[in-house]
Amino acid sequence: MLVSRKHVATIIAVLAMVVMSPFAVPIVAGFCMSIAGMPYQKGLERLGFSSRLAATLHTMSWMLLLALPAWLILETAVPALLALLRMPPRPGQILSEINTIPLVGQMLSGWLAPSLSTPLSSSRLAIWASGNAAELKTSVRHVWLLLAHIGIALLVAEVVARNHVALENAIGRVLAWASGDAEFSATLLQVLTRSIRSVMLGMLGVTLFNGALIGLLMALLKLPVWPVWGLAVSLLSTIPLGALIVIVMASLAMLTFKSWTSVLLFFVASNTVVLVADFLIKPKLTGARTEAPFMLVLLSILGGIEVFGLIGVMIGPVIVLTALELWRGWPER
Image (cartoon, rainbow, N blue to C red; front, side, top):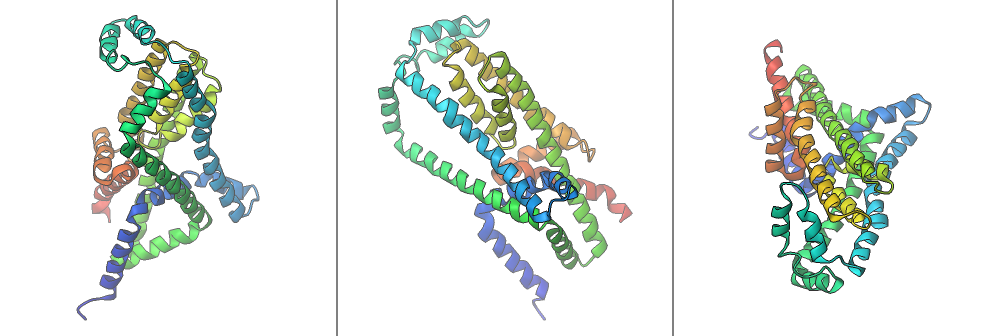
């Protein structure tokens, strides 16, 4: 027989992956969300909750956490932006405040002066919007896609949470059938699980680091409901530019009661924290459990983003850590 059943099944599986590739990000995100919250779900089951109810509560927890940043934007940042448009600050006042910043104040004020030559107002915003209509339409489309992907991720998390035992068994059978070696497939599944947990540990470290330090900055500046803002920073730190979105919205909210200098310093300091978390804390914690070299983990994160896009933040390190551990244990198997 020229074409075996394995060949046919492999071709069909590849075609299925191509069809589902536009939804790869929410599917992988849903799997990772479910894996990250699985200890919580199993804890509920040990308390006497049925597996179905525990899975539903697990998914609802993720839903509430994802809805929090949107609530903050609608309740705090948007009214602050509208207030700025109604009573725009004078450009001279902004530049004079920025000019008082030690060392870099004059450079920043000179750089911002052309942009502030025209006062901020609703009419200026309307002119800018009309000149960038195409980009704005694309942005609105991306927002709708983001909402749709969040919904898909939650559905995937629910399915995985309810059927995690059956899925683990099915994955094990597929690996054993594809490799023809049941022992190797079991080992591969264990290594893959450890790699995913290592990546989730790194992401958890980033969320705690960003939430604690940026939340502290918000507390020092007396941002209303700063613990909620800090939690929002933590939650969105798991995706590229997620923390930046919250920082921008928090900066807008602060402009209603803080000077431009204070807000600018907060913006710079917060983004410094995010950079340290992404390029130092995340690689260090991700490689801690598998004892992977720091530089290897960092390159796997950056390379994953370059090759796979947003999904590469999770896929890149998982693939590299799995390959590393299989290579280390190869002579023993």
